[in-house]
Image (tube, rainbow, N blue to C red):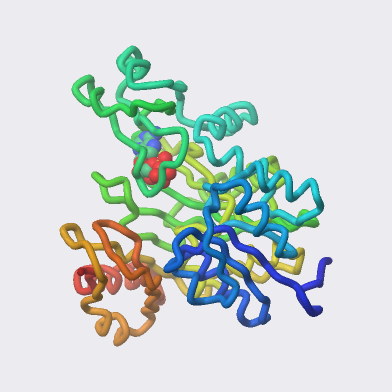
Length: 381
Ligand code: ADP
């Protein structure tokens, strides 16, 4: 066990200062662990949560390398970072978790799918495409989903091609064309593996998406699944975690199709949107489990204290500029509701500005309350 954090002079470095970084810092507070953050936006959510904020580009080799030299252990809250610099730092003895090669794999949806296929994990049938012309040539593969290989997130870089008339929406950059799955449920299983190989998982959650925007509408914890599907999903997530030799938190997003078959959609080797509710809903949050995994400390219990529903607070469509929040008082007055505002000063349509977790004795009751808040709480400018 590396208990260096319980001695003096230990600093954790985080690449990225978004909301996931903020919540990771929150989990460091009970241990008073000093945290350094690198982000190009001096106003990034985590910038106000640490005295050690460095403004700099996390995709730039020199910037990441120099930052990495100032910390004892380096982790990420977003995978779009300079992997070359992480490889160099690792080779010079800096502790980097997750491993740079895992981050490299996850940066590219094409490589990810090739990895799953090679390892025998179930993935939707796919083709790799170089440009939109390639996609047009594969018209008989439709209905399908076209995804950019790199730098897509929150549904950006994903387009559904149901018929030939949609082909004009294909991306003019390297992509993955995969069969459109007739989805019954989208599930996420969060696991964590420590440096000494201990492995844990949270109960699967269900992600309910806006149909058009491919963005999360709300999350149900735990997911309503048969025992068999639940154990298949967990087993799949644990096997992927092991086969990556993952160190830290891994979110495994799965599709359950209408025939009861599971497919891997994608993975994220960092704390994830589908684990926000673990802060209040579980004995130990995903953020704290990540910390314990990378520091090789004993894990906490992943059991849920109560069922929960999590809603993202997104910037309202049609509003852009200095943010104001409407209806927060309603959430504050509701039993079991926990508000998180990320402190982003500017809103724009569908930007993730915060989230609310609602706990209740059962998921149905939590959902009822979450839907009330979804109507009342608005992010505007
Ligand atoms: P992102 O990286 O932006 O989260 P995803 O690859 O997870 O992108 O896709 C976003 C959403 O699009 C998914 O959550 C799902 O709702 C839908 N989607 C993606 N791939 C498929 C597919 N093969 N079949 C059906 N729906 C899909």
